[in-house]
Image (cartoon, rainbow, N blue to C red; front, top):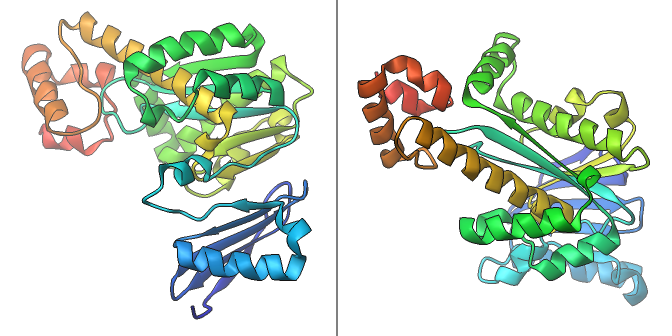
Length: 303
């Protein structure tokens, strides 16, 4: 493994973060202020070599605090722990649904959780919504809401018409989709912080540059420690938020389809394109702003 470029990045609640490019891929090292040492690499062999060095330097006692983040494509259990931060104390987790779906809204949800509630969420079988079927999530969403107080979760939906207006507004200001996503996450965070003012930390899945969400936060949000990490659904608060967001998205997608006497398929593939063509033929092109995210390539394919 030959060393390559090294980039030091600042990150809240971290003493340091270092990103390396090597001949074997990339390596990321973080030292959290709570004592957790985070090590991630693109392949198992590189990860194990680096971990052995860390253990040798720090000693066996210190190595117990090393958080294993090596990706192992053949192991589903390994994917479950990537992105797990093991935060002490309460935090807010946020996630979204509908970002990659042409039809329907963008939904962002947030969950305020404590270590005790996280254990109960885990006992329910809460996990990343992408690994659950819609029927499973519908039942689990009801259980999550029953477990949480009304002040402990927040769901906002941005319907297609408002979404398209926001997208155009951000674009005209030189911004992109990630800024719109960040705006939604920040709004959920601010709303939950108003209900839980003693909360000091939050976790969100990392999309694009890490400054996006931070730049959209208002006064309350700017005072918390915000962690952004890939595979953030490994944390119970984010996983629960992902389920609440997905269930609300599916409900709204179904309702939107019933309004126009059809079903609206998720995603952005051929079935979606065919359904969009049929709807335009019946209702005219003006319907798209009410049911779809216009910046998708699907819109151009309808011309």
